[in-house]
Image (cartoon, rainbow, N blue to C red; front, side, top):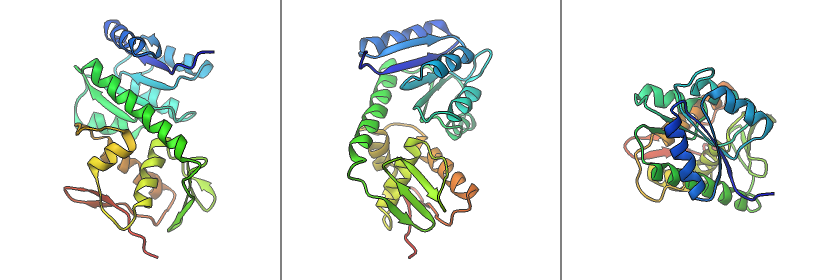
Length: 232
């Protein structure tokens, strides 16, 4: 059995797929390339990967639909790479459950850096699970041992990174947390990067809290970051 991380790539531009695959293999990852979303989805059902890199515009099953389908069965990290660079496209991709969004053209080295950051954060989260405490605030119970946020015993369906972000804000309640701090603590980005990941993940978390009728509120600190107040 190999201990290497397995990464699936889906892009109908074969040269892009193969370039990404080559860079991943140089970095020591196992990588498989697919040229449409349907092929990746079938492969994932038979052999789940550790991370997915997917394009949006693909035949059979586009990236948005693929992301939604994967999220119904897995919280595997997903990075969208796409030539669609409008704010609406980015928000849609992140709201469907992707963990990051890179617009084409991009540097393969930047993609590798973001992948490493995600894996580093996952490893750190696993190491912390034994020491992180269960937190109760408002009507939410945060359970780090199973990475679930529950309301009245019902799991509200946060992905692993959504859980980490909400847990960090709750653990630092009553204080404003800088977006840059969140990018480092949750994604592992050590330098300032241009990504809407934090803001759009907050939108996703807010929607899930609202869908379950939670009274917990994530406040925006304009021009800085976010804050959760402990009202009790």
